[in-house]
Length: 325
Length: 103
Length: 163
Image (tube, chains in turn yellow, purple, orange):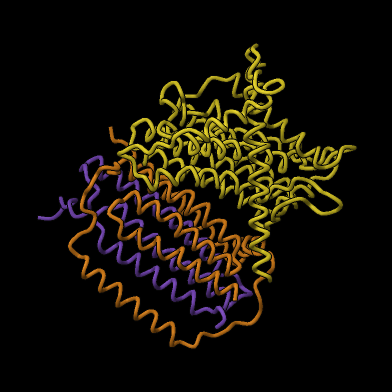
């Protein structure tokens, strides 16, 4: 194996992935979020920067880049400054195993790992370390409360997420993402039909895992003054946001891969199909955000432990029975 | 010098002894648990390394590592529950101050 | 050559944070230092071609156990400004015992002629591990599940507030 070439390839892939996500997820995603929010609430949303407000996120990014980075005096500076990097990296890492489509016979995926969805779940679980570290090191009671809420929420919802992944892996007979897409043959072959309960569990758990409304307790603006984000400013704040949006889009892409047949579809090229499906899931998540009120913490945890987890276990049993006999 | 079994064994020995040092010298019960985690991980490295170099066909080492990881998770769960109970009743997690049974 | 370099880098990534874990004065920092240690061990597993174990290592150790430890530290004695003496009076003895044990172990490891087994690891270990767990190791699997269940119940009962 040529190690120099491998490292160069890894660096190139990382830069390409980061650029892609900064544009598709962060830039376009934030704009989409605000536009859809405006549409649902009968207002216009951003409109002044660029045609129809298209350059709004660019302007916001420039503003955030110019802001001073403040480290609170009582904060643990090393941990405080590293935490956003952990969140952003964890958000980006999940994308390594997402297959975007096929181009002339080759599958467009950074690495088709044979433990693909296990890797994805592991990376999704790393975000919580960054959030806990950030919340603790800010030395602020709201930050710490937000971080603790986030930790309890995220490690709880990892379990139903894992259950849904197990059901899909059983159905497909492989852990590789490319293999799972290949296992979904034909129009009715998408796992959304054969694995509908797993789809619902995955979508709910994914929404909770990325801390979005109605499960956004960790950063609840109105009660915790944005939770673990309180003390962050400028670029460190936007790294947190980048990580969050990257992970939300990664969850949408994973839903597409696992349940909606990935890049498969008639007529249109595979890449177009993939992005169509992914943005459909993203739209669904945004729709939920602007229509549902926030859960209470006890409701959130009992939904996880008393509804989703038993449902996931029972569904694994049923799928196993159906696949075996 | 090619990469061999001995390399992994030496690293795991060092990790095990670091964990042992943590267990012997820490006062905080949670820190002692962290030392135990390091020791368990050192054992896991050994299991996987022996699997690769001594009995590659069987995979028993990797299966056993998974069992150890599961039991480590159990141990941490119960251990931390005990720490929480001790903190609630005695308001300390420093093990040398939890000495009600001494006289 | 590259494998050897990767091994030394990963060993450093494992061992240097492990030193921080056992010596740091700040308990939260030592808990956070567990994360790079676990990632280094993950890397070693990948070098040993145990991808499935590596994935589980990140998911369980780095993602769940560390978070649980951090959680309990923050619920008990984990403020940024708190300065409690974290070590007891056994530091010299403990250091001596660990050093002697390390020297002994390494001496043994270097002197023993380790046997080399025949055969090779299967290409896709995840499926093979699943088959092993549910065929020849099924008793181990069941007993482990039982222990998991019992410790789940035990943890809930112990940690629950008494009324």
